[in-house]
Image 1 (spheres, rainbow, N blue to C red):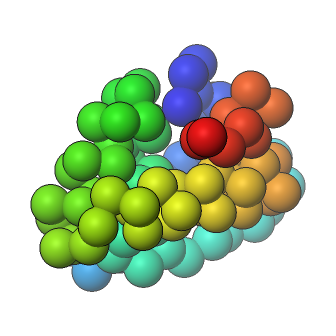
Image 2: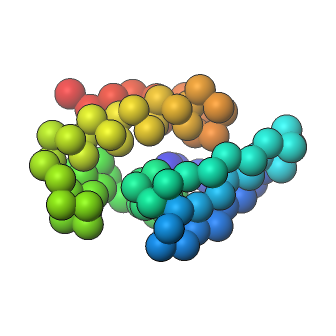
Length: 91
């Protein structure tokens, strides 16, 4: 998630997380996998690293992790929590 938007705040725990859009007054809750994806994207990690981390952490295949990341990224974009460049999916 390049160049974090200053209007977005988040907090995370082992059980999930909360993402807040300060300007629009909206709050979004995340389950554990969503929270992990948000944190990994916020660190600016490349997709392959994120997929590997998700696969290991949640004991899922890389294909499932890739699909989940793509869907999560689309949801972030839909709620304007990710820049347009982040809406692309992995091939």
